Length: 154
Ligand SMILES: [Zn+2]
Image (cartoon, rainbow, N blue to C red; front, side, top):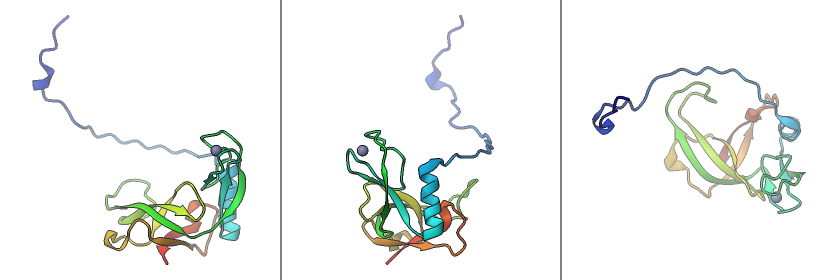
């Protein structure tokens, strides 16, 4: 077998270019279908209350990932707190909108998990963790996550 030599002195490629194109469908399942149709038809959010740990999971999941207990659907207040955010400036495939846009972790009132969505504001100097936010609903709701256009401060 030929020795490899001292690999630390060789030129090591740090990246390569590749294109992945994947078309797929995601089965929403009972809980997420319920969540999205409630947003579409009633402009309300659903969470799942775990009977074991009492956490309120938003968006609703059928089962608590900690306890594996089946959750109970409950309506959640639409207002919340901005917990974290990042502004996306780079262009890449399948973005929800042209950059810049702000991805946010939002904790709806009473929830124990964060809801990931968009903020209207894209100037990071005008956003801060802890600010109160509310959803802006789309007038043309079709049963997907963008039935909420984005969240904004109030
Ligand atoms: Zn639980």
